[in-house]
Length: 341
Ligand code: NDP
Image (tube, rainbow, N blue to C red; front, side, top):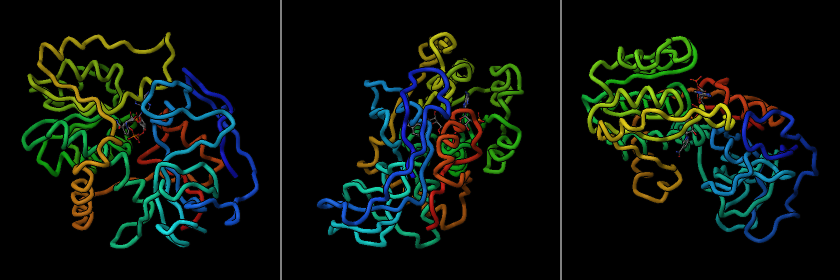
């Protein structure tokens, strides 16, 4: 089975009809070229950046999916056959080139060998040790240099990135405020250590809610949502505050008619705020990556970290699982389980 894209969706919300599940012949070891691997897919990651890849736009940092071709993204799988000297049958691998297929062939160089030893499970390479978790580290630690005694606000606080921002910030001695879209998610943010958390859908005036949580203002805002929430955060920044501009998910399904236009950008000038726009992939080849792995591995070893995974069973449910992330239907890091490890 594989999931292909039917058509690009440039604006508005994509629907299930924009995807197709197809049955195709399963590739075998005979179909391998030089330095290739045949992979059985275990887990596939559903990430908000994939909305951009559905769009067909050509000016982004990552190529769009093409109609008729399988969707692809981050995943974990098992090598079933290999013509590469680097990877052998039985190896577990991860990488960004996972086709949304139960089995597929691809160049071996696209994958990194991983193992499930030392209390780490294979799914953790998409979870606590995965890309969104690293994103939280880059934004909070490397760029905003969040430090003890400061106040940080994070939106989409119970999600893949947000739950890690809370825990990294708490570990560094910050006062942490989280916002999320349901009372259960708010409770999860508190369970992870947030000092205050609120439901942005029911709290009413966002500016007032942030002021109540941080009367002195914010040193750091970790922005996952953009839109109206970013406007409310901007007016609450302290002088010389920093914003990790990680994502703007509230706008990913927007149309030109209902897109939110930021009103309070002048606060960046008035409060001398620094906004760090960043893409995590730039940091994998820098010393920040081993630093992240070391920090999180140590926290895992000391049982000082929790990471909620929202597992959806079956590749055929992939499109729904992905579209749900853009509507807040996930609770924790959403991952599709395709087959058993
Ligand atoms: P999450 O696991 O947090 O899932 C997305 C969450 O966003 C939903 O659960 C929902 O939470 C919230 N959301 C969805 N729609 C809206 C909306 N219309 N308005 C407000 N909130 C909404 O996703 P990730 O942690 O993987 O990603 C979080 C952000 O980080 C995204 O913007 C993503 O693009 C960005 N990102 C950026 C990277 C980079 O390199 N710059 C790398 C990885 C992620 P709730 O119910 O609480 O509203």
